[in-house]
Every structure is written in structure tokens, then in C-alpha cells.
Length: 612
Image (cartoon, rainbow, N blue to C red; front, side, top):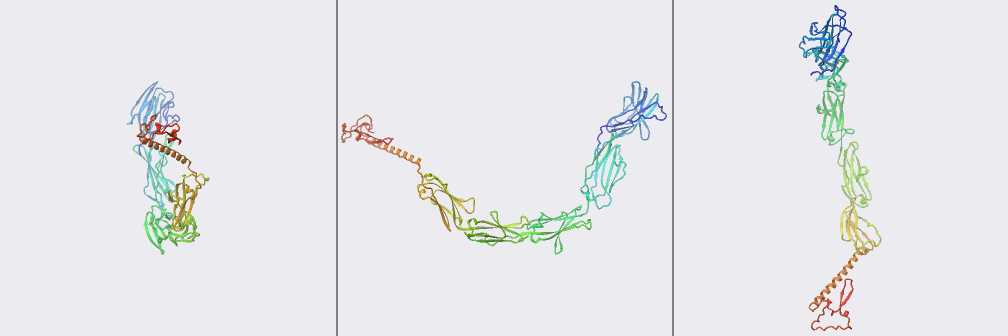
């Protein structure tokens, strides 16, 4: 044990004044504390008080050994108010004794070796008197040391066995201080107290226990109780510990892992046979298989498990486990058996091909069969919808909706996750079905020429139909998201008057037939905005034509003087008669027709110089 902690206080006990010893004058009495308790390390003061008025006097302190020998430690001469203290010897103590006041003996940092009897002797005119004060020093233990039995304790031993030993040091020890055995039912303990060279007392306590199987999970610890000043007590607990026990097997368990339903395991799975006894130390386990009432040993180990990798149907049978515990009682059943049943499913057989083509309105019976253990169940589904429970699926008056993927599933209700499936694809042959997407109806004449429309047709059949259109345009063909064999084609075009008269049709065809649908639009209204544009274009064209004619005429007159010059008269060309300017003849009658921007006309005379 390491260093011990210091206490904090001590207690004084004041009795009645002591009687004068024989031969001492009855008029002289001294009062001291018979017992002074202090924790190691504290400062303690021993008081000695004469009763009555005695002055002068001589006060002396003696240390009394166990042999009875006295050693003068200090003295004080008191006369009036004057005190002359004197320490004679400290007997090697450090710090030394001190004498204070009118004879108070002071011990700084009390030590275990200070635990002695101290006698105060007072001599005065009235006589001599003395009294004894006993000093008791307490040391609080800091910790305990426990030494558990590291061996294996057998529950079959009829006598009590040593469990732990606990050691600690203290000045005042609690129970077991005298070292006498204490009998506690089927257990007892012994204690031994030794005074060390440090004057501390060391206590060793040993527990002897008749162990039982129930003690295998028990937690033990040792508690040390000790006394403190002022009639107080304390205790220290050792760290908890447990015992290793030897006890025979009383019960055996045997099972399959992972756990199964009614003992069935799936073929191809790996399983463990687990055997467990409740004895300690762990005994050996022997695994075997019964074949014709004979045991065929499979494995012997301490782990208590045996693995069967990828079990097959020929491994059905009875398996056993035996605990090899020779300390077990004769009446204990050390062997256990179980029946291992391997569940399996063979591939599913169909009475039809996996891809079956049949004509519209025909009938068919499809049967699937399977072998397995335990007896499997069968069911038919299509698109995750259960159709029928049983091996036979009957379909009559086939339609295109009958086409699709059918699944026959074999399963075992008592063995989860053991199942097989077989897929059959049914194709229904026939001429196409056509489904147009009608355009929204509108009032007659509300559609206009050149208006853009989108037409859609969907078709199904087998073989897959081909969709065509009577008009050209932006078209595309793709499967319908809803499935069921439908394909869809869309055409985007601009309406014309011809389309309003004859319509636009889509046609679906396959080797077994064809069908068509005509989209009608009714009369189309003219494009008013486009007619206005056409009129403006014509007006611009006419204006440009007149400008070209005027330019041409001007170029023909280029050789004559004053041609195309305003306000000048030009001479006629040679050989050409000069026109008369008779007032009876109006200039407008010989002029050219010139187009104006507004489409009007005016005549210009040849004789006028600005004829250009």
C-alpha cells in the first residue's frame, strides 16, 4: 500500500478532575484530557491545568514507555505572571516538542510513534499532583490490494476454497481485527494483523467460499472498515473481480443456423450445425450423422459448430451432436439429434414453346410442371397480376390484348426464397387495328389555307404493321409508351384546297391485311393577309414596268437636240415632216400614255420639249 492520506481533525474528551494519588495532599488537583485523538500529520496540543489558585508552581511533562519508565520532556516554572519554559529532550523527534503558555505541550505534525502516554506532574505549596493523557494517532488507508484466485474453482468440491486475499494498512482496523475466522454459511474468512516497522498495522483477510454454478456471473469485492476520530468510521472497497469456475454440463442445445422453417434448408445453401452445452471449461463436441442406425462421425472440435457447404438433396437425414463432458451427472442427456431436410426445385417444364404465335380468336391451354420437395405450388402471372393458381393457363378468343409475356412461378410456401420461374411470350397474329387521334372539331370555314396541323395514327397487329400517309410532310414513327404492341406515326403539314376536297389518310398494313383512316377538314377560308400582299406586289410591278418604258423612250430620243430638255423646242429629224401646231389639233391627241404611281394616265405632246 502507498502513502496514507492525512486526516483533518481530532477530538478531545474532558473527564472529571483526576483524584490525587496516594500520599499527595488532597488540596492539589490537575486536569488533563485522558484521551486525545488526532490524524497523522496534524498538530496536537496536550493541556495540563492545575485546579485552584496555586502560585508559584512547577509543571513537568513526562513520556511513559510501555515498561513504565518515565522520560522528562519539558518543564515550566510559573511565578506570578512570569513563566520560564524549558524543553529537556525531544528523544529524536522532528519537529521537536514545544512548550507554550503555562505548560501546554505541543506536538507538530503528529506521527504514529507519538502514540504514547503523557504524564503531567504539578508541584506547588499545596502539594504535588499528576494526571495521564493518552495520545492516539489515526492513519486513513489510501487503497486496498486484492489478489483474486487466478485458478479454476470447481463447484464439485465439497469444501470451501480460497477466493481472494485482501491487504491494507491502517492505524485502527475494523472487523476481523483479532484474526478469528468468521463463518458465513458455507464460507468463512480469516484475518491476520501485523504491526509494521512504520508502526502501522497491516491487515490481511482471506475468504474461503464453497462455490456454486450460480457464482459464475457473480461480482466480488472486499470492503475494509476503519475508525476515525470523533467516533466516526470509513471504508474502502477493492476493485470488483470475478471467479473462473469449473462446472459440468447440465443442458445441451442443438440447432441449425440460419434458422429454418420446419427444418427445411434450401439446396445449395451453406449451413451450420451448432451444439452448445452449459458446462465450463468448454467441453469437446462430436458431430455425427445417423445412417442405418449407425453413427458416422463428421467432426470433433471445441467450437461447437460444424459447417455443411452447399448442401444437396442427398444430404437429407438425421444429424446428431454429443457433448464429451465426463464430469456430467449420469442423468444428464449429453446427445441431441435433429432431422435435416433439403428443399429443392427442378427447372419448370412447359407444354408449349417459349415463344408462341396464334391467330386472332383462337383458344389455347398452357401447362407448366415442376418437381421438388416439399411439394411446390404453381401460379401464372402477367404484368405482375396474378391470373390463376395452378399449373394450367386457359386462354380463349384471343385478341391483341392477349399478347404479352406470361410467367409461370413455382414456389414452396414453407421455405422462403425458394422459387423458380419460366417465361412464355404469346404473339397474336392478325390484320392491323388502326386507332386515329381525331383532330379537334371546328366550325365550317374556320380553318384557313396554309394552316399547320399535326395528324397522328396508332396501329397494332402481328406481324408489326407499317404506317403510311397519303401526303408528304414531317412524319415520325415510334412505339406507343403504353405498350401492348401499339406503334404510332405523326404527320405535320400545311392545309391546301386539295386536302379540303379529298382529305388526308393514314394506312396501316401487314402481310395479313391493311386498313386506313381519312382525316377531313371541310372548306378552307382564303388567306386575307396574303391577298393584300399580292395586290401590292402587282402595283409595284406595274410601276416598275412604266419606268422601264419611259427610260427606253428617252434613249430613242437621245440623238435629237433638246430631247428630254424642258422648255426647249427641238428640230425634227431629217426626212421627217414637222408636225403642225394648229390650234384645231389638241396636243393630248399625239402624246404617249404615262403610268403614274396611282395607276392614272396623262398624254404628253411630241412638240413639247419635256416629252421625256
